[in-house]
Image 1 (spheres, helix red, strand yellow):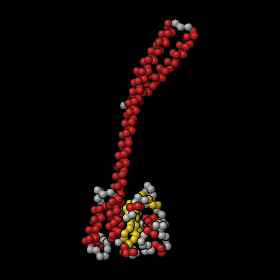
Image 2 (cartoon, rainbow, N blue to C red; image 1 turned 45 degrees about the vertical axis):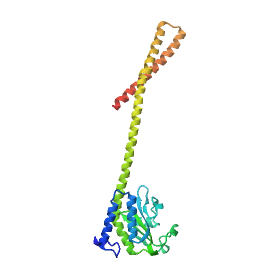
Image 3 (cartoon, one colour; image 1 turned 30 degrees about the vertical axis):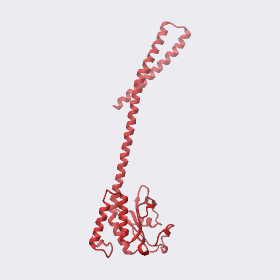
Image 4 (cartoon, helix red, strand yellow; image 1 turned 90 degrees about the vertical axis):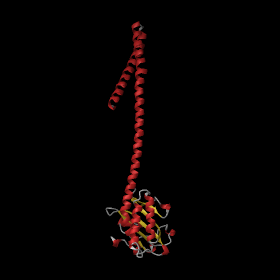
Length: 274
């Protein structure tokens, strides 16, 4: 283990261990957001290799791309980049191998991007973040080495060691952060279901009141209408009036049957809900 802690040739072993412990404490501090933890750890490693610019990009399976989770440039935070093997980040993510470019203008595989004018130097460094299954979960990009100098193999090795240390912590932190978001999503779903339940309860109450209204306000007066029509027939009417009376009596009887059918269905629904 001691042979792997080489964060700079001029640093004492004790300070290296202190730095590692500091990073571990930072990345496991759940009182801070994941973005804050990643940005602070990025500042640490950039200082170790004397780079003034950098970013941490993490893989998002649902969006099939690399999202900028930490960066010295706040304008690109949250941006999603497709995994393109012709880009430096995409190449390192797919190959799971570190990439050191001393001069991007002399590279045969990669061409300077449109935004290269915003960089002071043409040297780039990118290493993968490997998860528990040794599959890439993201990348760390570094540029603009202090003194306008090129990155070295020692810088690449140092950054790879740092990535190896923080990768499991980043993976666990992302998992915890994802579980937290899922928990909030389930809470919102529970609140939505509770609201739906209240709406169904209100609907059920309104339906019960409607049944009661049908019983008292429809059925009783309709029974009176049918009874009086029968009374008129008993009292005696003309043949012409009898046709009119039959039409009214049949219509009232049909409506009375429909009300009874409706009440029967309502009672059956109430019995099933009990």
